[in-house]
Amino acid sequence: MEEPGAIGVEDSQEHFHADYEEQRANAIRALMKSQEKLQKLEGKLSRMTKGSNNYGRMQERIDKLRVHMANQRRDLTNKEARRRVDRNRAVTGERDLSTRDFAGTSAREEI
Image 1 (cartoon, one colour):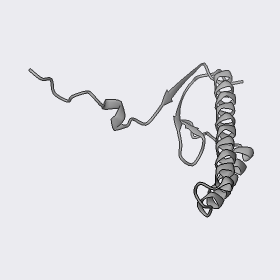
Image 2 (cartoon, helix red, strand yellow; image 1 turned 30 degrees about the vertical axis):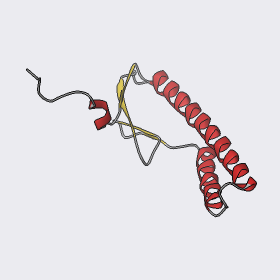
Image 3 (spheres, rainbow, N blue to C red; image 1 turned 120 degrees about the vertical axis):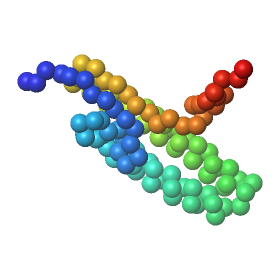
């Protein structure tokens, strides 16, 4: 058995996570089904009259589904992190930097 080493992990658009060894964690089937269901419900909502009772009920269904999907994502993240930590000695993460991260900082110092 190979001794565990260190890996780096980054977020990926097509896959849930990708590491530098080119191993990818795909989203679970249940999460993908939930995403498809969300698209269908949002399509139905777009054809409803705003302010109607049916519109309100559909919004509640969509909100409930979004909470469910957040829980699915959190569960997948925890399981994937646990699996990677068990397999490797050190795991580092990388995230995309946005301009929001640099808000309030200046490239030059004011005198």
